[in-house]
Image 1 (cartoon, rainbow, N blue to C red):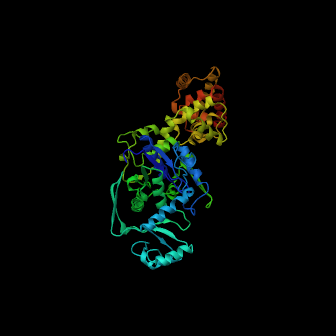
Image 2: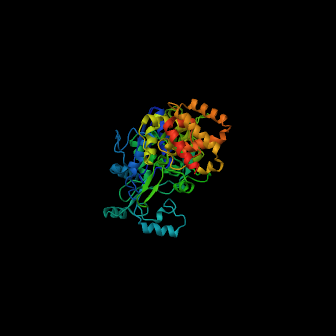
Image 3: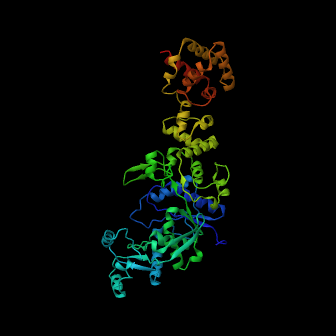
Length: 506
């Protein structure tokens, strides 16, 4: 295994939105592959045609594109192990299922859904396995003649693995160490369905073998399936080529009790999908991190820290830094609690670190969606630099910067009028006269001028600074007020003071 090229895969089912746990699985696969000079493969596991959702595959591709996690091989870019959709590989799987039957490791099962339902009612916690398989209609309980007759008549049937009795199956997990299973506790899983499509259990083993996957990272919810997969690798004669496995810890609810679900996000007011997902059947939109205003860099950063750390105090990582520092032995066995406030902190930190140029198109989109006209990119860049430290999510740029482009529609009059008086009114009228004598506003010089006038009029900062901010911005927010005035310019600053004085004196 040591001399094999590193090849990892993400193999989602196109059945709905991409949960942040799925994106973290992509990320860890991607980081491991790039760290070791390997390949990251995207394979679409669409064998369950009943759950297939139109548009879900494109949605997955769009999510990975937004995150910047580009597969080396996929249904779109192709590759030497194509096709990368399991539905297009259907013809491959039956031969392996039939081989398992021929060698006594699997069997045909002809039970109808009604017969299985009756058995479930008859036997509590019924499992189709070594305890009850002889009581059912399959090639183990029927004679060879009966089986041949049923097959010749094209009777609907599945192929099930025959789990051995009283055996212990073990493997070494890269995260969890030695893991063991008792075969008596595992039922005879279906490998090939009546429609000829493989189940996940058969397809994942066949495809990992044929695509030369060296390492398989997946969520710990797949751990109970491991004994079936281990046996299939052995029974098909591929044990020496089996990938190394790592079962990643769950992402837990904020209280730590149970896996984080879409319902938890809806209940607690935060997204659990990478991007917005529209469920046509339910006619329901589920919000995503992208639509709420997360930067992809921040999204990946926060996911990386859910169950992994580099052993130091660093919390902000670029993708290149993550590739450099990622190590699977630093992934925790324990589940990681999701903290939305911490997630927003990551985004705020990334907004601060991004250049105005890199944020420009995103901020312009936020503003134009709200009806704000942005005429000059150069002016917008100055505004972004002025306010980005006050923004947590991208939509915050609207509140924090819209007043630079248009006069505030409302002023927080209630914060000014109760203490408004003639002395304050006189101060701002004099200030207007001083401004008119200036060619332009320099923030530092204007602040000195403003404070000198305060002293002259025997006013305190609390008397005039807040009214001045509200005149320019509309409320109690924004960067340094003299920087705001300098960016607005002399004429617009005078205009807003004059309009506000009419309101304050009314």
